[in-house]
Length: 294
Image 1 (cartoon, helix red, strand yellow):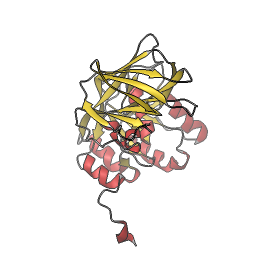
Image 2 (image 1 turned 180 degrees about the vertical axis):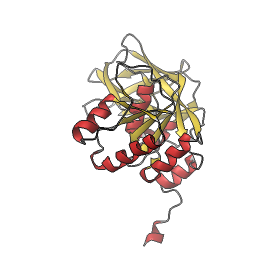
Image 3 (image 1 turned 90 degrees about the vertical axis):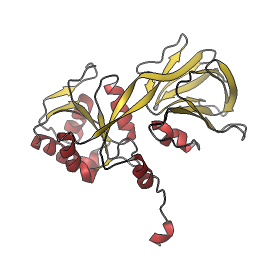
Image 4 (image 1 turned 120 degrees about the vertical axis):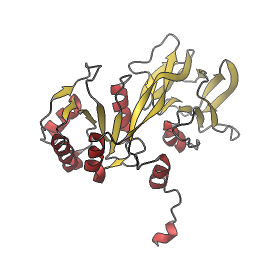
């Protein structure tokens, strides 16, 4: 089993976890490869230099690994997905963050989960991504998003106007602080925080959720994921922000943006005893009665 490990630099209080992780992988006789920046962080900040088979640098675009472990929160998982890119490498998220919808394996279950991976006792879910197309002004780097693409105002109090078309037909002009286009995976992220609906990961839909719209009649909209979304933006500052899973870039007004489902999927490893509905109950406290704890 060839394993690639990716992580964040916010693991100072998780050193025991990292020791457990590497010890278990060594016990399973796995080949271990570590993202170069994460390995340097462990060595410099934590004085921890585990025995590994190699490092994965930013220059390496094809990984000879069977699976990737993302150690951190959902933000780390999104970064890992961007590094894996179009390779057919499934990702397991080990949660050392807070909520953890993508990184949903708790620290206490690391050894048990790795045993299941070694026995090939797991399932793989394919999650759709969004791809951004920009007329005459390419997005720097990775122009895909697993959670959402957000069109946002910059550092001004003025709203922006987002002229929106679906499959070439005019929908509306959102006057708002922004517009979030989310996948089912991203329905529990930014979109949920602005009152967008929750979709199960297997839905063939996208969500358009306005951010602080000027009109209270403008509500989130669910559309088929086969639709092509075309956007034009007006702003008093003559510029606006585009964020793909938190990676942002400033664009000038007057250009056209297009968003569509990507031509590949991200593979996510899920345990057989973990379901999305269980995650909703545990992470969002669905069905919990606060009175019972009083």
